[in-house]
Image 1: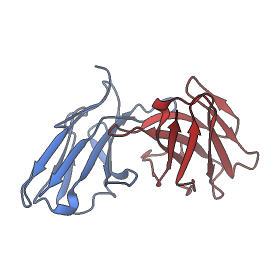
Image 2 (image 1 turned 180 degrees about the vertical axis):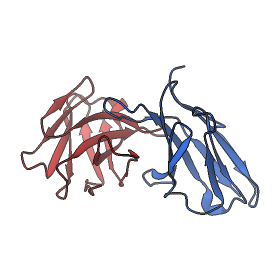
Image 3 (image 1 turned 180 degrees about the horizontal axis):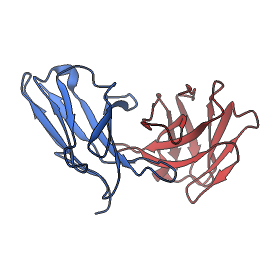
Amino acid sequence: GAGVSQSPRYKVAKRGQDVALRCDPISGHVSLFWYQQALGQGPEFLTYFQNEAQLDKSGLPSDRFFAERPEGSVSTLKIQRTQQEDSAVYLCASSSLTGSNEQFFGPGTRLTVL
Amino acid sequence: DAKTTQPTSMDCAEGRAANLPCNHSTISGNEYVYWYRQIHSQGPQYIIHGLKNNETNEMASLIITEDRKSSTLILPHATLRDTAVYYCIVRVAASNTGKLIFGQGTTLQVKP
């Protein structure tokens, strides 16, 4: 497919476990974003990549959250020592640098920390 | 980026026009108005954006007031599949990061 894909779609983790969430952006999209969406709330920005460079990580809630995009395409969001408050849907979006700058979102990964 | 204010929820009859308002009184001259929507259990979807002129595409129309302090998203013939949360966002189109700042949005319920 031509859209943004994310895996896994659902993840259940025990408190204290580490998790890794994957995002495959649209081919050729330079920009990649991660958002966190708590139940009943709008998405909140976590971090932004332009190619492999992480230009903005101001939204990462703690140093337990780490994101990478080593080759400028696939990105991984890693959460260490998960806590219950990390339970949320994690959304990935990509966009090109030209045109309307609209962001194309993936379906999200729903993380539940028990 | 400027803040936006939207009603929490709205209802619309199927086949009628849905008019979703948004206030953005602190919008800056270089900020665009973007609309996204999020259908249940899906990621947000881009609808339309504009600077100061009214815009129309295959999904919706965007009417921006002359002073740019408010706007209205119009779905001309709402269907049940348009039931979603609609987010109005203002931002600089070509900003360095391009991050979207979502508010609570408007939950639109289209009823048969």
